[in-house]
Amino acid sequence: MKDVSEKNKKSNCSNCADKEKCESEGFKCKTHELNDIKKTVAILSGKGGVGKSLVTSLLAVMMRRRGYSTGILDADITGPSIPKMFGGDGYKVETGEFGIYPARTHNDIKIMSINLLLDKTDTPVIWRGPLIAGAVKQFWTDVIWGNLDYLLFDMPPGTGDVPLTIFQSIPLDGIIIVTSPQDLVSLIVKKAYNMAKTMNMPVIGIIENMSYVVCPECGKQINIFGESKAEKIAKEMGIPFLGRIPIDPYLAELCDKGEIEKFNKDYMDYPLDAIENISGR
Image: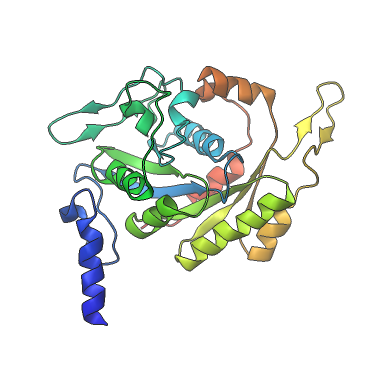
């Protein structure tokens, strides 16, 4: 068994962007030698369309507002949306002697996304799973993030190659699961949670997006997708429920304009407190 284990470790390291940056145990890849990243958090959903990129962006904006140096690693290679939310259609990363430098937003949030490397932002990335996973690892090993209090990973939907690669290869301090009120999504959330549990990944909690809409006339909350189930699911799984985000036309407008850094509401206060309280490595 020992020989097989050692062989597997060697094979895994040989597939990394730079095998010398992989630790000799646990399959974990070291980040760039010029980086000092204190805490890493992945934002995960079991399916697409529930708003994980929105949650990732809001967390980064509000953490930066609290004074933390923050970065976003856009791990959704085939469906990147982070640059657009930050008005980054014109952003480009820079390369230097020591590696790749991420783009910086107006409020100095560092972002790295495949869209920042393409000549045209609407060019599709038609890659197979291993190549996609390898690109995500290079965003960790080859990008010069510098000193960061928090690096957030905007994960692709599902429980496939990229989440598995990140869980195995990158030292994460915890994950946040994003859901929406529908019954089907609740089932998918449990799959994401069970994957994290299988990989011994600490779950910080659950955030429910698109929970309700506020009537502009009377101020009543309308549950257009049905009653919220996230709090019940969180209780069943024994993990914290971190709050609800409504369908907010103002927030949608900011995202469309690339001005999410202007967001000024308090939807993310409790999730931020939870992230601040994680122990780190």
